Image (tube, rainbow, N blue to C red; front, side, top):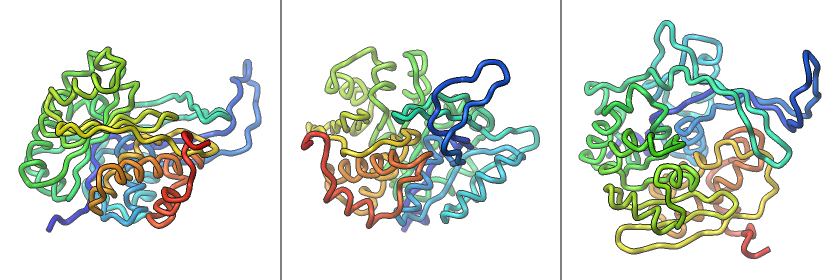
Length: 317
């Protein structure tokens, strides 16, 4: 039996979020806001904490700096029971950090410092520890600069060979990001980008065509997160469907796609059928959006499952 239910490797960041953001004050002025909070975010960090809240035994793999933000990120991960023994720190590294200005409608322009996400490296000696999981996830391919030069692919290949189910999320803005992503796709069971990232990589607009582009590159299934339009699932066996978004009052969209990944992994660990798995992932994402900062609205498995069963979707309103 694998040691972990879920191993989440990649982008971990410290977020400071303010709400509601309305304007940048001129000069040295001040604009008052109602809420200020801190969160561990990032495509791997959000997923790790959300998965731990769901009851999954979770390993975090990434890097933080030897700074106050790194201290807080590690303490916060440990607070939720995440194993941080595979998190790296080295002199001179800075913790990846963001200042997030969340508008009343949930959108969130941000200022970001890449930090240790670009520096951490999982070598071949460390690989057996990090892939000892039922589900192995890489979150943030395209930002993990040291790992993007071939090592992400080697770790994913090892994870597949060891029997893990593999999932991938990315940070992509144009076709130039495709080579680093292409390296992991032949070993990816579920590729889960946002529709915006998928379209930026492919130049395609149709969901089916976009998914087929990645299926042809080796993934077993493509799951596109569509924001307010829900999610689209497309498996190489021909199974395809769209799940609508849940109708919630959105507070902040930080980490919604990353929470989706954790919900999807929970469905894999619990052996949900594909449609229920995607609906549960959608429920996790929707709850995430109800709080300020990544994971704030996610409580636990039972709360999310009951929400999935009872909450209306946008299609029904």
